[in-house]
Amino acid sequence: MKSRASALPVAAVAAAISLVITAAAAAPCAAGSVHLTGSLSQDFLRGTSAQTIIGTFTGPEQPRFAGLGWEVILGKVGFGGDYMASFLRAPDTQWWLDWYAQPLFLSFHPLRRGFALDPFVQAGLGSAGRVLLHRWTGTPDSNLFLSVFPFVAGGLDLNLDGFLIGAKVSYAPFMTPPPATAFDNAPIGQIQATVSVGIALDW
Image (cartoon, rainbow, N blue to C red; front, side):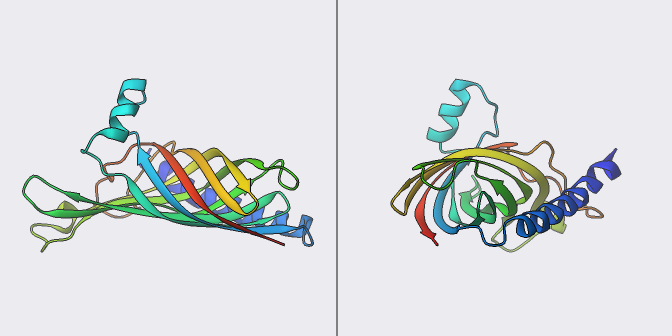
Protein backbone atom coordinates (compact mmCIF):
# COMPACT_ATOMS: atom_id res chain seq x y z
CA MET A 1 0.00 0.00 0.00
CA LYS A 2 2.84 2.38 0.86
CA SER A 3 4.68 1.67 -2.40
CA ARG A 4 1.53 2.53 -4.33
CA ALA A 5 1.17 5.85 -2.49
CA SER A 6 4.84 6.64 -3.08
CA ALA A 7 4.37 6.15 -6.82
CA LEU A 8 1.51 8.62 -7.05
CA PRO A 9 3.69 11.79 -6.81
CA VAL A 10 5.80 10.50 -9.72
CA ALA A 11 2.66 10.06 -11.83
CA ALA A 12 1.50 13.55 -10.82
CA VAL A 13 4.82 15.06 -11.96
CA ALA A 14 4.54 13.32 -15.34
CA ALA A 15 0.97 14.56 -15.76
CA ALA A 16 2.00 18.11 -14.81
CA ILE A 17 4.84 18.18 -17.35
CA SER A 18 2.52 16.86 -20.05
CA LEU A 19 -0.07 19.54 -19.28
CA VAL A 20 2.51 22.35 -19.37
CA ILE A 21 3.82 21.19 -22.78
CA THR A 22 0.28 20.92 -24.14
CA ALA A 23 -0.70 24.38 -22.85
CA ALA A 24 2.45 26.00 -24.25
CA ALA A 25 1.87 24.43 -27.67
CA ALA A 26 -1.81 25.36 -27.74
CA ALA A 27 -1.41 29.03 -26.80
CA PRO A 28 2.11 30.25 -27.60
CA CYS A 29 0.97 33.82 -28.37
CA ALA A 30 -1.74 34.17 -25.73
CA ALA A 31 -1.82 37.34 -23.64
CA GLY A 32 -0.31 36.68 -20.25
CA SER A 33 0.26 37.93 -16.74
CA VAL A 34 2.70 37.53 -13.86
CA HIS A 35 1.29 37.48 -10.31
CA LEU A 36 3.53 38.25 -7.32
CA THR A 37 1.84 37.84 -3.94
CA GLY A 38 2.32 37.75 -0.21
CA SER A 39 0.27 35.08 1.59
CA LEU A 40 -1.13 34.22 4.99
CA SER A 41 -2.28 30.63 5.47
CA GLN A 42 -3.71 28.30 8.11
CA ASP A 43 -4.20 24.55 8.11
CA PHE A 44 -7.19 22.71 9.55
CA LEU A 45 -5.15 20.24 11.58
CA ARG A 46 -7.89 19.47 14.10
CA GLY A 47 -10.90 19.03 11.85
CA THR A 48 -13.31 20.88 9.60
CA SER A 49 -16.30 21.74 11.79
CA ALA A 50 -17.25 25.44 11.94
CA GLN A 51 -16.20 25.74 15.58
CA THR A 52 -12.86 24.02 14.95
CA ILE A 53 -12.09 26.17 11.90
CA ILE A 54 -12.76 29.40 13.83
CA GLY A 55 -10.65 28.16 16.75
CA THR A 56 -7.83 27.20 14.41
CA PHE A 57 -7.56 30.72 13.05
CA THR A 58 -7.81 32.44 16.45
CA GLY A 59 -5.99 30.00 18.75
CA PRO A 60 -2.26 30.13 19.57
CA GLU A 61 -1.50 26.41 19.20
CA GLN A 62 -0.67 26.42 15.48
CA PRO A 63 0.97 29.59 14.15
CA ARG A 64 -0.26 30.91 10.85
CA PHE A 65 2.03 30.47 7.87
CA ALA A 66 3.29 33.53 6.00
CA GLY A 67 5.18 33.65 2.73
CA LEU A 68 5.43 34.54 -0.93
CA GLY A 69 3.97 33.24 -4.17
CA TRP A 70 4.33 33.66 -7.91
CA GLU A 71 2.41 32.60 -10.98
CA VAL A 72 2.83 32.99 -14.74
CA ILE A 73 -0.41 32.84 -16.75
CA LEU A 74 -0.52 32.31 -20.52
CA GLY A 75 -4.04 32.74 -21.82
CA LYS A 76 -6.12 30.75 -19.34
CA VAL A 77 -3.42 28.29 -18.22
CA GLY A 78 -0.77 29.09 -15.63
CA PHE A 79 1.99 27.63 -13.49
CA GLY A 80 3.58 28.84 -10.27
CA GLY A 81 4.45 28.18 -6.65
CA ASP A 82 3.78 29.24 -3.04
CA TYR A 83 6.29 29.08 -0.18
CA MET A 84 5.30 29.70 3.45
CA ALA A 85 6.82 29.24 6.91
CA SER A 86 6.11 29.85 10.60
CA PHE A 87 7.94 29.54 13.91
CA LEU A 88 6.66 27.56 16.87
CA ARG A 89 7.98 27.70 20.43
CA ALA A 90 7.46 24.43 22.30
CA PRO A 91 6.68 24.29 26.08
CA ASP A 92 10.34 23.34 26.71
CA THR A 93 11.30 26.73 25.11
CA GLN A 94 12.79 25.08 22.04
CA TRP A 95 12.03 26.73 18.71
CA TRP A 96 10.83 24.82 15.65
CA LEU A 97 10.48 25.96 12.07
CA ASP A 98 7.36 24.80 10.22
CA TRP A 99 6.96 25.16 6.47
CA TYR A 100 4.24 24.53 3.92
CA ALA A 101 5.12 24.84 0.25
CA GLN A 102 3.37 24.28 -3.05
CA PRO A 103 6.55 24.62 -5.13
CA LEU A 104 4.95 23.60 -8.42
CA PHE A 105 1.34 23.84 -9.50
CA LEU A 106 -0.63 24.19 -12.70
CA SER A 107 -3.70 26.40 -12.83
CA PHE A 108 -6.69 27.10 -15.02
CA HIS A 109 -8.44 30.50 -15.13
CA PRO A 110 -11.74 30.21 -17.06
CA LEU A 111 -12.53 33.96 -17.25
CA ARG A 112 -9.28 35.95 -17.37
CA ARG A 113 -9.31 39.00 -19.69
CA GLY A 114 -11.95 41.64 -19.17
CA PHE A 115 -13.10 40.42 -15.74
CA ALA A 116 -12.11 41.80 -12.34
CA LEU A 117 -13.09 38.47 -10.76
CA ASP A 118 -10.68 35.65 -11.60
CA PRO A 119 -11.80 32.21 -10.34
CA PHE A 120 -9.22 29.45 -10.70
CA VAL A 121 -8.38 25.84 -9.97
CA GLN A 122 -4.90 24.43 -9.29
CA ALA A 123 -3.20 21.03 -9.04
CA GLY A 124 0.38 20.19 -8.16
CA LEU A 125 2.89 18.80 -5.69
CA GLY A 126 3.67 20.07 -2.20
CA SER A 127 6.00 19.67 0.75
CA ALA A 128 5.54 20.33 4.46
CA GLY A 129 7.81 19.86 7.42
CA ARG A 130 8.93 20.77 10.92
CA VAL A 131 12.59 21.04 11.97
CA LEU A 132 14.16 21.74 15.37
CA LEU A 133 16.24 24.93 15.34
CA HIS A 134 18.22 24.04 18.47
CA ARG A 135 21.02 21.50 18.64
CA TRP A 136 19.66 18.14 17.56
CA THR A 137 19.49 15.30 20.06
CA GLY A 138 18.77 11.63 19.48
CA THR A 139 18.12 10.39 15.96
CA PRO A 140 17.51 12.74 13.00
CA ASP A 141 13.91 11.54 12.61
CA SER A 142 13.09 12.91 16.09
CA ASN A 143 14.25 16.39 15.07
CA LEU A 144 12.80 16.60 11.57
CA PHE A 145 9.33 15.75 10.26
CA LEU A 146 8.77 15.74 6.52
CA SER A 147 5.86 15.16 4.13
CA VAL A 148 5.34 15.29 0.38
CA PHE A 149 1.90 15.30 -1.18
CA PRO A 150 -0.18 16.01 -4.29
CA PHE A 151 -2.85 18.66 -3.91
CA VAL A 152 -5.79 20.32 -5.63
CA ALA A 153 -7.01 23.84 -4.88
CA GLY A 154 -9.71 26.30 -5.85
CA GLY A 155 -10.01 30.00 -5.27
CA LEU A 156 -10.82 33.49 -6.45
CA ASP A 157 -8.68 36.56 -7.20
CA LEU A 158 -9.99 40.12 -7.37
CA ASN A 159 -7.89 42.17 -9.80
CA LEU A 160 -8.26 45.93 -9.18
CA ASP A 161 -6.19 47.43 -12.01
CA GLY A 162 -3.16 45.33 -11.13
CA PHE A 163 -3.72 45.09 -7.37
CA LEU A 164 -4.62 41.53 -6.38
CA ILE A 165 -6.67 40.29 -3.44
CA GLY A 166 -7.20 36.53 -3.37
CA ALA A 167 -8.25 33.49 -1.38
CA LYS A 168 -8.02 29.75 -1.97
CA VAL A 169 -8.54 26.42 -0.24
CA SER A 170 -6.15 23.52 -0.89
CA TYR A 171 -6.71 19.82 -0.25
CA ALA A 172 -4.07 17.08 -0.07
CA PRO A 173 -5.68 13.62 -0.48
CA PHE A 174 -2.73 11.99 1.30
CA MET A 175 0.65 12.88 2.80
CA THR A 176 3.67 10.61 2.94
CA PRO A 177 7.32 10.92 4.00
CA PRO A 178 9.78 10.83 1.08
CA PRO A 179 10.33 7.25 -0.13
CA ALA A 180 13.17 5.28 1.51
CA THR A 181 13.31 7.57 4.57
CA ALA A 182 12.45 7.03 8.24
CA PHE A 183 10.87 10.44 8.86
CA ASP A 184 7.39 10.87 10.29
CA ASN A 185 4.78 12.99 8.55
CA ALA A 186 4.74 16.70 9.35
CA PRO A 187 2.04 17.64 11.90
CA ILE A 188 -0.19 19.45 9.44
CA GLY A 189 -3.74 19.02 8.21
CA GLN A 190 -4.87 18.03 4.73
CA ILE A 191 -6.88 21.23 4.20
CA GLN A 192 -5.18 24.62 3.92
CA ALA A 193 -6.86 28.04 3.61
CA THR A 194 -4.82 30.92 2.17
CA VAL A 195 -5.46 34.63 1.68
CA SER A 196 -3.10 36.77 -0.39
CA VAL A 197 -2.42 40.28 -1.69
CA GLY A 198 -0.07 41.30 -4.45
CA ILE A 199 0.34 42.72 -7.93
CA ALA A 200 -0.47 41.53 -11.45
CA LEU A 201 1.84 42.50 -14.34
CA ASP A 202 -0.10 42.01 -17.59
CA TRP A 203 1.07 42.01 -21.19
